[in-house]
Length: 310
Ligand code: AMP
Image (cartoon, rainbow, N blue to C red; front, side, top):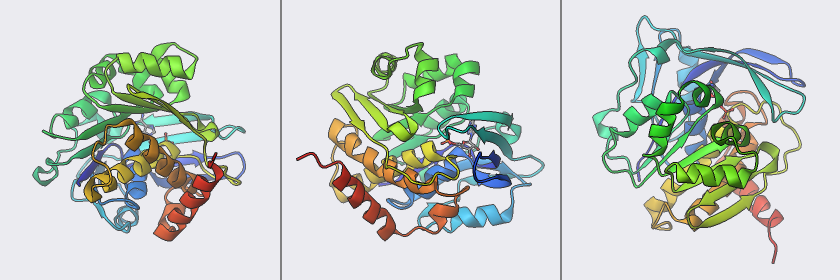
């Protein structure tokens, strides 16, 4: 069941309070999503980088089994999107140091003709007008979900509202949900977002887990209790990768018949939680690059045991 992700592929600079900093790290919303999703299902990437994008970064991404980079365009004469972030002592909070949109200010990437039959589409973080333009190129997805970020909520609200009318689901952080709705209570903020269009909203709360608000009900899931957090960058995108990848896998195997249903989405959140918990153990894709499916399965079982109530 084909899974496509659109979003950013970036060169990041990351500053952490305990593990030092890295000047040039492979990042981007698409990048983390695709690497994480590949543990569950094949994933096709739609994005654009400049000709300054290191070959080594492309090879790292390509080394994930099932990541298809035919839709990752390298644009001659353009510069790759760059982002810098600094984590505060509480690793759940970060400051954006700079955002250089570069190639994101130009024409959006093209969706290859062979990708258009995708059944599962994830619109990872980028300009919401670009997200909507890309979504329209998929005639019949069974499931479309978007992510967004403070920058876009602040500067492109109108485009974001238009996008929310068209997607099935939205995944965002607690702070962003509050920024979008003006509501401090997570459930109230999520319900407000449901009124804006989506069938479900996942509000992530870092080490405090996440809340699913669906038209059919509410669910809550804790985070995996991590002992060591080195770099939380990409936690949200890898969470979405595990979530959407597991739904795509379930659809392909017949285990999931309604990818929009409450139970299917609720279960997929546990996969997102587990894969994100690995991602934060190192900078960039370092941890996911060294991970096996057995490692992922083992942690999933441990997580399921921790949550057993009866
Ligand atoms: P996360 O930690 O899951 O929010 O994702 C962080 C990643 O998103 C970094 O690797 C950045 O390159 C990328 N990113 C940062 N700001 C933006 C933005 N405004 N739009 C799209 N991607 C972004």
